[in-house]
Image 1 (cartoon, rainbow, N blue to C red):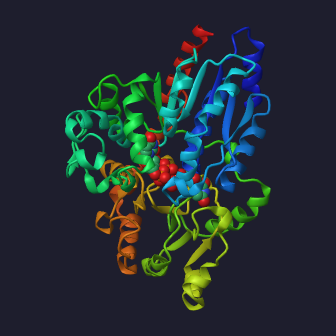
Image 2 (cartoon, rainbow, N blue to C red):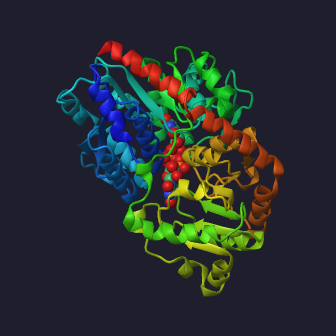
Length: 484
Ligand code: UDP
Ligand code: UDP
């Protein structure tokens, strides 16, 4: 059907709408980028996808090639070959943050790429981590420019409100840690953000994330719009506060195009199907809603000290579980076996009740399986939205970044639970019995189930024919056509 859209667009005498996308690093950023790109492809647009190379993980490079080969006539892919930097200057060991920094310092290489595109651009849409260094380039473009924001509207509210906070405390506006008090009250948003929920890097003076938010947030007003994977029923309050100018004055429209569906190209290829086959078969044998799915995202390694209690908790919960284990942040480096960490005795107990895998799974395929009744997640925004899409109640266990802020969205919306007393995943080890109790809660609490089902329905309305996403996409395409 993708081809069908393409021919419809080509056969009419309408101008071709050409949208360029620039991705950054990690699946949590690449997935929303390609999902939004697909929204425009399905409405007949032509897409140029610019991808920083080399990517950090195999999961990213695999997905990029699947995306491109699914739309051979509509997508042109161009590499942005990153400059080589001395990684010791990056002041972080996190390879994804090193990559964000490297991409930010390579963006001058983009101008020749954009200037040599054979068709003029109707719009340029790029990752939210790239605002300031792209500025000298986007200023020169004659098309409208947008970012896609990869987290919750609640997180975008914080991001956008930073200049207001800085201005209200001009004596110490250099570092976020010095002008933020015990909690941040954002106009239009009822529940304040406690300091302890902030992404830890933001409170580190001179971390890349801190510098980024300080530099980039005052420039949001120069954009033509911000895409976000959220929707009215889920985050209506924050979306309204942003769009009504309460959070910050002068913000461009915030387009809640979520939940952005996963598309066919995301299905893992045959070589990896080898893993999904047995997973789905195992799920098929379980009864409806009886399995806990456990995954801390695409780049969180579970600490060795925590793994044993996690295993104990899963066993004690009494539920069957599908546990995706990551022992290394970057997939290319996985080598150790879980058994080496757990020991053979505990490992055999784990195998009795659970299925443990150490691969990149088709998460949507799992969440959509009727046997899955609950999701233990780190609270990555994509994971939350995907769980909502499938109506699966969530227990979040924030490991870092924006995950306490996204967990608060889960709590407020009522689709699941966030055991706040656990703190960050990097703090004290959480005992097996506490984990078991929370798993039982997410699996049995009727109110989570009802809310999750309601949200699933709303999600499908928003993403369906005539829903909020389609309305926005069509409106923008019409606007862009007038400029061609
Ligand atoms: N994902 C997946 N299989 C895995 C791990 C992750 O498909 O084994 C996908 C997941 O569905 C989501 C993305 O990778 O779309 C991860 O993004 P998220 O924001 O949840 O967390 P992050 O990995 O960026 O921390
Ligand atoms: N964040 C974001 N957009 C921004 C600023 C921050 O999404 O413009 C969030 C982001 O989602 C992330 C955290 O702040 O979770 C930064 O840390 P991380 O490496 O975990 O990024 P992630 O890939 O999980 O989004």
